[in-house]
Image (cartoon, rainbow, N blue to C red; front, side, top):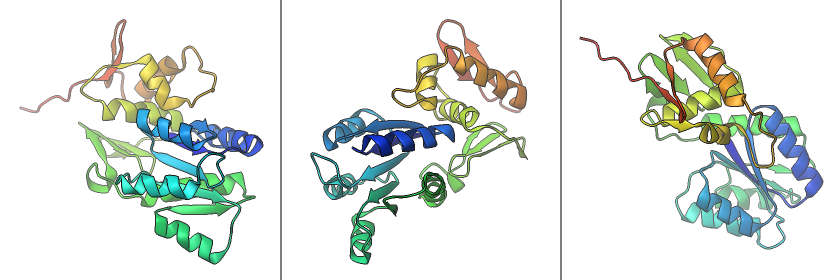
Length: 225
């Protein structure tokens, strides 16, 4: 799952980036409103963490513009202003949650997970993604195979989710790496191969097919006679 964080404080931004990456999120970090807007225009994000005190644009304006475009991406606002009227105004503008600085990094991660669980979904009952006997629940980070739960790590889940969402096409290694890593993170040369190997061990060797020289795709669902 890919997050966009807009935060101009280098120390705080670095700490949040490391904390969320450590628990499995791919985090892109920008430090200005201009880069925030350009990132939204060129990438898909599942979540946004937005600081109100950016150097070139008020966070309230960015949030207002986001919601005026009918974008429903969940947003947690971080702010130094903790007054009741400030918090009410943020929620009325379309923030899903907020944290007042300074905040605990574990609490931020928990609030991200909480907002994702209750976020509205558009991709089927309970947000489930289906492919044959496989069902993914992105908002709850769980998977079932033949109706039995299968424990996956965060990064295993991200790879599988990317494959299911793009089930009718071949995903290159670089495309799958984008689901795993944020900007600036060191990418292990064989990370995708390792996670595909783990997924095959847990879900069967035939679910994920290797397209030699191109990448990976899910095997077609077999039609029952």
